[in-house]
Image 1 (cartoon, rainbow, N blue to C red):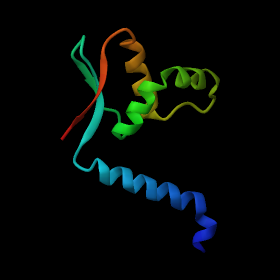
Image 2: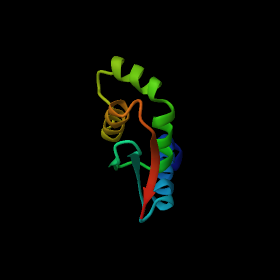
Image 3: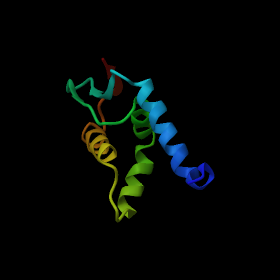
Image 4: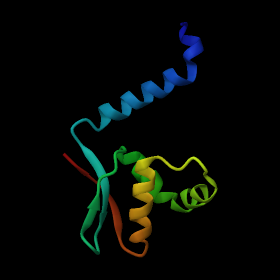
Length: 94
């Protein structure tokens, strides 16, 4: 199959591989400084930061989504919603 016909899928695979190599041997998660509780969704640090910064958008998408959200988004959303008024930071561990 020519590379041209794979277009979108080829780009997604390369992006996924790049993301994995950037965080190889590391895990990213959220840490609530008030409760001292952490969660480690299966997502790169950049995507966790994106979710934290755009929680209001994810909340609206979740209301109208029939197919559901990715597991890491649902887990992160639940954690951030539970710790809404707390100081939550994105952390990395190796």
